[in-house]
Amino acid sequence: MAMTEKHDALSAPASMEILEGDAGDFFALLKPRVMSLVVFTALVGLLMAPGEIHPVLGFLAILAIAVGAGASGALNMWYDADIDILMTRTAKRPVPAGRISAETTLAFGLFLSVFSVATLGLMVNWLSAGLLAFTIFFYAVVYSMWLKRTTPHNIVIGGAAGAFPPIIGWACVTNTISLESIALFAIIFLWTPAHFWALALFKADDYGRAGVPMLPNVAGERTTKHQIVLYAVLTALSGVVPTLMGFAGIIYGGIAAVLGLVFVWYAVQVWRMPDGDRKMVPAKKLFAYSLVYLFCVFTALLVDALVTKFTGLAA
Amino acid sequence: MEKVDLTDKQKKARRSRSVALGIVLAVLAVLFYVVTIIKIGPAVFDRTM
Image (tube, rainbow over all chains, first blue to last red; front, side, top):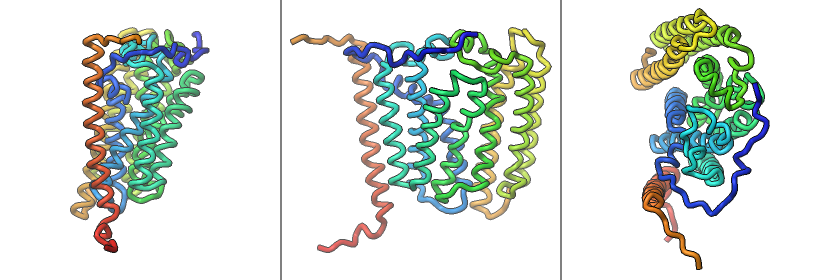
């Protein structure tokens, strides 16, 4: 498979371009679906943290985290425009589709990065602002510019960027990084490989065309399926850690255990799928369920935290 | 001087961007005002005349 050797986003001519991109296109640069996951997991971190934060400051913190996540999405779209145009999943994004120029996207992403970090620092605290800045750097530079095009472990390490929001939300309240917030980080971090490799299995042609060295393209389907089962098991185990550490109740633990077992079951179905199966139905089901899993686990954590906070009883 | 005529699509996109930017700026002005009051708290009334 040909690896992507050259990055072309900056080589586009800086002409006097008149934009055809509307507000919706600029919003699309923020990767709203990824942003919704970031908002949700950061909110759970913020509400689970011991201590109080003024509701308006809490709202502003989540808004700043969301904008920071969106900024990193815009920087990713700026850098990846040359490969996004080659993949069916991403070809209609505003930059490869020509509605917004690469230069405008870069400026938009940089401005929102500085603005979101400064706002969080000035309004909440500088630890959470520093963590947000690191998250943006990690996603835009470490993942997008370095790992994505060089190693099949790109989303294993790069997944850390998507896992930071609960730590940031927690730090907004406590001004610390604790083991509890790291446990929340671990759930998303360990969930990411199985989620993305399920996608990479049924989008292998896309990634191959773009020269992105995803695990199925580099190591083959069988190795990817082994790794998916391994990470699904690790994700299921990490899901019950909040209960084992004592900062989530037994009911949450039971829900997380069941959700985790179903996650492993879907992963095993992918593992049993014959190599060369083009329909990839089990992989598509695992991808869909992985989103349900993460949403349900963090919803259960949120309910647990709210019940504990407002009634004093552990759920 | 060369004059640039925008197409209808470009005019519509520009208007959409302008409206969105206006709304965002208005919301931020209100939000930062409220947060300033919250951060300063009751001390906002402590000032020498």
